[in-house]
Image (cartoon, rainbow, N blue to C red; front, side, top):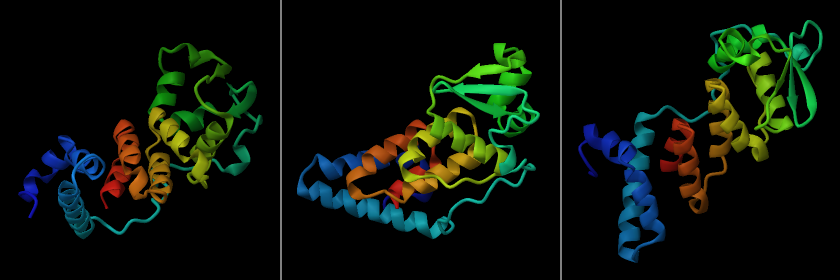
Length: 200
């Protein structure tokens, strides 16, 4: 019994108790490592008894999707993004319907509101393409080598469904050697499913 169940979130999530236990695995005596691994095992056992079976999250049900044929299609496009020097055609109505960030960009007081060309400097073409495919279709296959960059983009543009897909993809590669990195990644981008996967 690690602690009172009602205190578990406070100790292990809010006050970084899991991170502390992970650090003990690497930087302490064998006795502390045994206690830490035992505590982590107990946390994982309790987490799985309350958590639903891990599976890939489904597409968000709250909106209609335009379809694959409209991804990067100039037909009726009313905005062109410039990524890595390449043009990407889009439709503001699809973007505004999918993300509060795009809504603020095109329906708020930002300079992009009336712009037909918008440069996006902090994202790679491949990542932007996957993000747009998700916006237009509601699903996307995420290559493992792009999952972390796509998680960052999904967090930046408040695309929760895409973020969950990224978390699921990234979690498939969790191992003892990368748990501290994965936990930090989850913490930085408020990726709760990935954080939970690090404790299992």
